[in-house]
Image 1 (cartoon, rainbow, N blue to C red):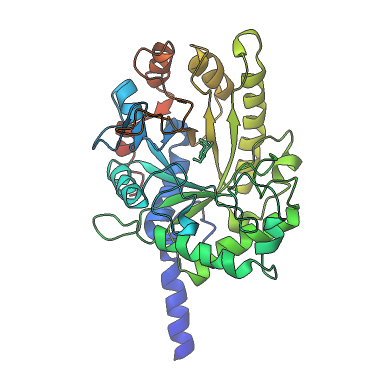
Image 2 (image 1 turned 90 degrees about the horizontal axis):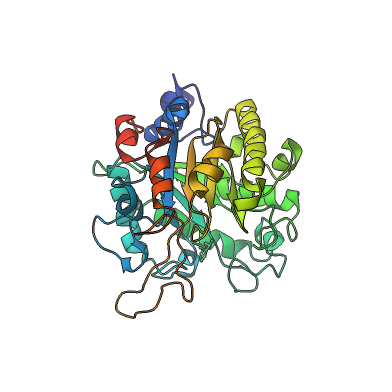
Length: 380
Ligand code: BMA
């Protein structure tokens, strides 16, 4: 009887997966999460979802104005993807490392979801060994937090907080809002405590698998899609070096920013094109969703960057989304920039010379913003 009951429960859990061409890494993913994953695959020929970090929270010179959005200010329409950041949640902070209050963030996430958009969350976790921030590479931190490491219990307590936050994210019907979770990103760089210069592939894979198993099986968090996310790579082998396995990943992505003066060379668009070729091929092979998880040219000093660099590099590659990084802004009432001394922005603001070029991207029909995302009914 008990065995029969257990088999019935097992099959009931598989129902959301039935009839879906693409399987989420978490076999117990919620119906909405499985639908989102499959709908994002279906949407690949329709265009690329356009995303922006902290879009609803602040921009240059403003913060926390209900309904205001950086992307909407620029083109008259909200983005299709909203990115948020958990750094400092693990310290029980009220605000994240970019001073966004977590309670406000939860409401912004609900808001973006209600607009039909997709939510993605990154985590610049503090260094669990040195107690400094994510950019402190000391202490062989990954080795210390994986099972058997001396800081493993601390790491579990951090994941408890991540799980508690994720479990707050419910829609009006009380269902969990699916989230593309992108921890331990840019690991092929050398600036975070989980990067390749201070973490072996084996340690990284152990960290990823533990994180996935703990959130999924211990904490019963079933509304996450997991995004694997290096920065630079030159080959499929390079891309896959830290890959924890198909059973732990839903989205294959990378981050790539423009630096320097792009007016006299084609480096950015050529490299982007090359990496997207590798990415889309490997993602097709592994039945994962390909995406450009972070990009941008800080302050957009080259006015045709969006069309001549970003869109040129993307060409006809079919990827699920492109996510631009956050705009800075003034801290209300202080007259100081939130992120002093810079006033960094990645989306054109006001009379920014790149505005017309960004508008060309907007009307190019290659990208999906709020309205089309809503029409695509990504959660149904
Ligand atoms: C980085 C910068 C930092 C920020 C971090 C996390 O790329 O924008 O200022 O703290 O992302 O959002």
